[in-house]
Length: 105
Image (cartoon, rainbow, N blue to C red; front, side, top):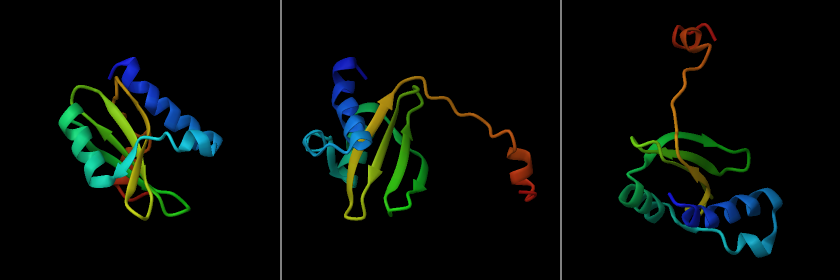
């Protein structure tokens, strides 16, 4: 993704952090299926991690084999907004992965 392509994502991230309504109106948002289709088609990204926020939103990390990544947040109404994106995504192993896998944690 180019710096030009990252600018709207930076605005979206700033809006989420600052809560500024004027900036929030400029977020890159669409229905989740369209967002996923765009990220798959343009960047070959697919969901690789998911979590639920305390206010009922779904946060997803989408990654590609080439190392690009995008974080989106989806509201209960199905609208997803881009939160951040970048390059050089790497999977890491949790330090306690063996304990978790063995049911000790």
